[in-house]
Image (cartoon, rainbow, N blue to C red; front, top):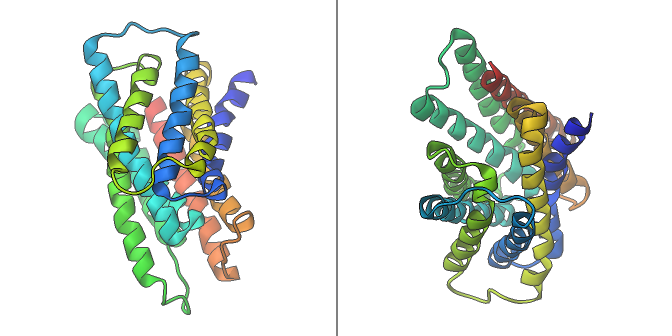
Length: 285
């Protein structure tokens, strides 16, 4: 029971990160720098309690992974500005799940049994259909077509960053506890590099440190939950966060949806979550 409760921490924390960042204000640059600063503060604290065996190699790889995370998060915040939280998060999560799954097949040969192949193909189909449902604009919503195209293009870049952030550590077999501090340093470096122009540090940047603390709390919850309830269960539960972020974007941020769009969004979210669960089950086999 305790393990399941801990496994729900990333669901809640990551689910509300986009909404918190939007509510706290600022542009994508302020949001991503504030988020990374919060994550760095949290990682420093966590490093005093859990210490892994680090080498110069693991430090450099973790730094690079963190820089890729900054690419992913910056572009996700840009997409949120363009098309809103309720449309961005299901699409972003779906792209990441498909990308990570395909990397698992190509790099790590994960679909080694017929059952895993069936689950993997089912997951990809569910996710693609789910993303299509959440991207539905409605017959009268033609003026937002340009924003949607821009948002989708930005999310492709974002997803590549997130996928590299995840896959790099796995490829080099670096434990999350070992990576947590140097990775957060890489996140800060990446966010500052990406924000080379404009006002980077202001009150909105400081406010978004809260967002970083939320993200880092979710990350810590996932690291703790994985050995308690298994990678498959913790990974699957983490995907439920998109339901929270999507619905909170509509009901807390007031992103307008017609009744038909609401039905499509809810179905799309459930399909993406179902795809995430199938991926988790495939990993467990």
